[in-house]
Image (cartoon, helix red, strand yellow):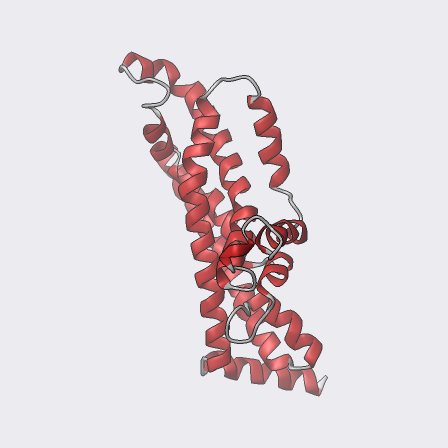
Length: 234
């Protein structure tokens, strides 16, 4: 018990002093995750919105596919990206395997279906509610997309935060494609796994505390956004 208490004390010291190893790992994790989520948002919002209001043969298949991919196991996503970026894969010539870029690609694969599916459902519901009003103003389906996305910004932002939460807490995919290289591809989740196994509990606990704090911050932000949205509607 004394060792555990001492480990928590040492972890608190690392956080308060913002230890160099701790700082490097946290900053890399945030850079990778924020980049991946930004890419997923830039691609997922328009794709999800178009899927929400478009009507074409096979649309249901796309909806089922993206909904299913929301639960894609991270290790499977990592394996697919690994195969694509390996030397024998179609993108092997780019030399991206075991780099932060490969980790970003893996996280995009995980977050993109979440953004697309939530955007699709939100925009589709709003289109059904406001279609007659928008058409009376001379707006077509495609011209209505920016308006629908803006009106649904609070709901969509909650979905984006959900994607950020999944990416920031993910370990399997980034471990497969990043390799957990010290000072280069070591993130909070992979470092916690490694340092726990090595017995460096202060660093593992310090990273765990920061990751938990980040998770709580994301959930608090999602709750606050939902509260603001309800008040604006009311």
